[in-house]
Image (cartoon, rainbow, N blue to C red):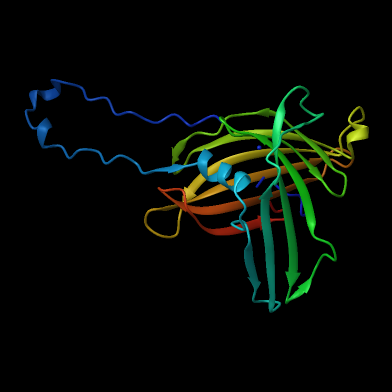
Length: 239
């Protein structure tokens, strides 16, 4: 299982506007037409930025496999650098970035799947919020480019690209072919309760050497205030 920390990579879909044609048929009942109800919008940028900039365990989740009677727990935490200082990232020269630490411990039926936590440094800027790269403790050095700005708010059905990540074996081997590329899209799907939506990050990974592909998604159930109510993961990777 590939637990690449994909919180994980923005063009908005255009909205359709109904144009009234005045004078068609001479009808004078136009005023009786019910007014269209505006579609509910949900915060996007603020929800994801909060994950990176506040100490939280909002990405922690559980998964129950009833067929095998196994319970999986993803204990995920994000902690901003305590010093509050900024660093330079060799993948994006000349840009000072914020740093947060992401740690995930996976257990199955109460027993750790990993003997050591999976950890990574997340490198990002704010105003606007852009996730520029990631350095995993196991060595993977990821540079995100291009990075598109996330929408402030969006409606259900919106989908766009956040960024494309080039994932190198290590910082020292950035002049060599990458081990994989990862395309990360965001999208909003209808929630399972009124007034909620799933804000999802869709990860499409392609291995350089074999051409093999992997897909996964990390989804956060939110409301129109941007609260994270639940997390679910699908596929073979997790943010």
